[in-house]
Amino acid sequence: MIPIHELARQTGITVRTLRYYDQIGLVEPGGKTEGGHRLYGEQEIKRLQQVQFLKSVGFRLQEIATILSDAKWDWTRGLKKQMAYIREEQKKLSMMENAVRGLMHSETIEGGVKLSTIEQLIQLSGQSAEQKRRYRSHIFDETELELWERLPNVSSDDPDSLEWIALIGQLNRLQAQDVPPADARVQRILRRMDEKAQETFGDAPEFLDKLWAARMSPDESQRLQLYPLDPPLLAFVETAYAVYEQERQQRGE
Amino acid sequence: MIPIHELARQTGITVRTLRYYDQIGLVEPGGKTEGGHRLYGEQEIKRLQQVQFLKSVGFRLQEIATILSDAKWDWTRGLKKQMAYIREEQKKLSMMENAVRGLMHSETIEGGVKLSTIEQLIQLSGQSAEQKRRYRSHIFDETELELWERLPNVSSDDPDSLEWIALIGQLNRLQAQDVPPADARVQRILRRMDEKAQETFGDAPEFLDKLWAARMSPDESQRLQLYPLDPPLLAFVETAYAVYEQERQQRGE
DNA sequence: TATACAAGATGACGCTACGTCAGTTTCAAG
DNA sequence: CTTGAAACTGACGTAGCGTCATCTTGTATA
Image 1 (cartoon, rainbow over the protein chains, first blue to last red):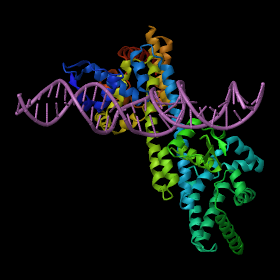
Image 2: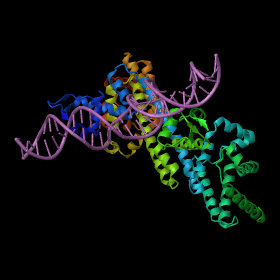
Image 3: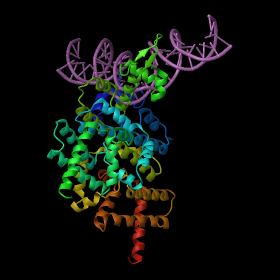
């Protein structure tokens, strides 16, 4: 029989916790000294380990007490329930993860997070999936909807989306620094974006035109759940793109 | 300006929560009636939505209050911290998931969960990864350690592991029903296991022999972190396997 | 205008699994 | 017998509300 401090040392559980487990009757000491100090034996250590294991599975102390005392505990049901709970929590966490990534990316794009950004992100995640889908299929046809699926997204973290976000972020910075749209740095970014668009969507000029038209209208962008870009940035990109097109044609492409 | 009940209806937040937010100064009503009833306006609704969004990201109410009041809030740091937190929680959950799956599978194998099973699972997950590795490399050579990696595991849920678990569960049931080891059902299961072993490990009779020897010794199994099987079941399998081998040789294979 | 009834207000306790004092008692060694 | 460490009990705090209980206000109807 060992005193409480020794048990705490052996198991890594704090003394307070052990006293608490005694208090709620989960793990009671095997005996006491005359003065009322708790003493634990082999049996209690085993029980403690069982408790620790079941806790690591995510059961609550009340449930653990039931499991350990009730020989007729329905493991099948209990484990299924526990698994369902775990799955739910995982879903919540991955939604959180997406939201945080959205904020991080909007930080990259705009060089900071403003409260207005949050409002826009609220809009972005506010509509129901059904609503979104219907509005999209109202604008795009079958083939185009497949292309739509390939669009980069602020909430994702694949390398493609990341590069888009980084490119837009760079454009935004250049525009804020009053670099002219015809500047070589800007033009190189546009060429890269053009290349990526080709890679991603293949040769689908009509789709890209529709997409661009939607991008230029804040309302339309919002309804389509496109990440909202500032109008000055959009204007900047439009001018730059005109220059890009013009130069391409001059080179006879 | 709308009363609290109306706001609750519009936002889906409970009246109690709204009062709590007022209490902690997170979202205060825009005004009050003579009698002291809370009244909310457009501004408060916006603020509430921001709060809801940040809550969905996983921030705590205190942090949200800071974020919304402090214009100099360090988003970069805050978001990184939040992401780190999310990742930690995800890790915890996936460990829980593994543990629950381990219990579920042991239920399949043994037809139920006993407290002694838990003790064994504690042993299984108790040792440090380093300890395990060293002991394994003490027994197996380089090539064999690669084969070891392909072993099915009670905590995984790939189709292969699942079938192994199911097969062992069936053997256990047959043995409990006193079906003789030479019974066709038992032999078919052994043939299937043999096929799977061939598929998984290729032609490595020495490795399989070592593995089987370890399986037959409870101590060795435990040290190698193999899922513990009851001695009667092991004996049953050994007898059945002898029959299987004999028949195979009689067929001249 | 009196009344009834819904809606609102405040206050307090409950929940989880302990951490963290504070104040008192017991244990083991010298 | 003293002393210092260890143990004891009890109480409050935590996050984000849910859930009473009790009292007051707002509003529609008779």
